[in-house]
Length: 192
Image 1: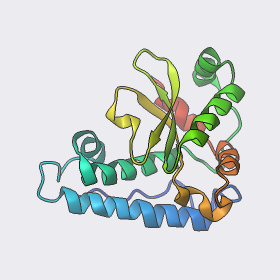
Image 2 (image 1 turned 180 degrees about the horizontal axis):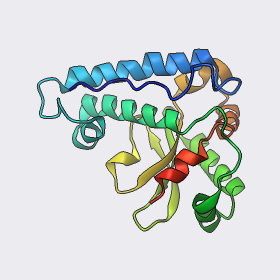
Image 3 (image 1 turned 90 degrees about the vertical axis):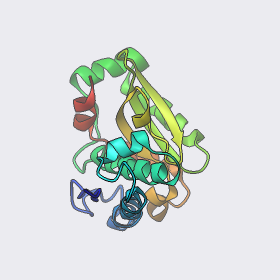
């Protein structure tokens, strides 16, 4: 069964004014769609041809891994955003953040620092390690925590196509907008 491009969980213009409909369309309908198409082409005739996307990411290498990881990372990223989101986390997630970082402001500061330190394209993540600790990690290109032991909770896409149309090369302004869209309910639901 081929991998399919998942629908966005909201309308293309729903993230405006923080992300424009043009950026969302370029990102989802263009880049992410090409990754999904590449996965289907590259997986054809392999042992992974009928596998779910997560299994392809975990069990592939080379070009197939790059396409599958990018397809998965993008689908995850859209879930991390919501038009009526932002604000502050609550409940168990807020408690974990306070334990690990002191408060949400400190989490944002450390996350932004990691995101700004990525040279070129990549991702910034909030993850939960198997021992329950939260951590911030940055990955280059298509790399993803999905291939390790930690559970991805939150992702920020640092590829230029994610923000160039709206913010040019000003990644710091994009990060400010990102925090206004973070879907804390989705992040909280992923806690173990």
